Amino acid sequence: MTAKRLELLRVMVPQAARIAVLVNPVNAVDTETTLRDVQSAARAMGLQIQVLNASTSREIDAAFATFTHERADAVFIGIDVFFNVRRAQLVNLASRYAVPTAFVNRDFAEIGGLMSYGSNIVDSWRQVGIYTGHILKGAKPADLPVVQASKFELIINHQTARMLGLTVPPTLLARADEVIE
Image (tube, rainbow, N blue to C red; front, side):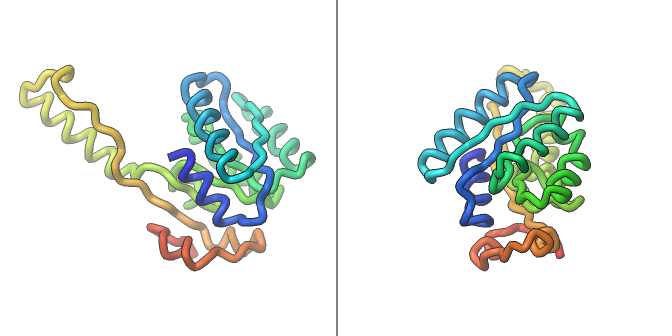
């Protein structure tokens, strides 16, 4: 999913050569996975990656100031619960610094983020309900198969794209599950 999100960001901002990646070092497992996947995908696409860490609100502010100062063409936000909690701050900073930014879930795009690509949260909650139902009917959790997200969604905030001076490619609009006007 990380590589796909980076690919979609590249389609949205085809002139991008430098992508800043924001990760939370406190969440070592997700950070390690995100960086491994994004670096591999970036190499394949010929992109240069700049990694910045943030685990506090102040560090998020500093990271965006650094992205702008070092002229990142776009920003890729890593998967992290802390970033989801700070989504308003992240979207506001992306808007203030006018930097195209890819997020992991629809909540970001709904409040003004450029785009998001990630698992469909409604489908994920449905899966939780199914699992819970099996357990309540007597199934042992250890006997249940591991289920991963299978439904992903691309959300594009067209208004934000226009504000950033971006023309959303028709192919990307056609692939989007939702386009916010």
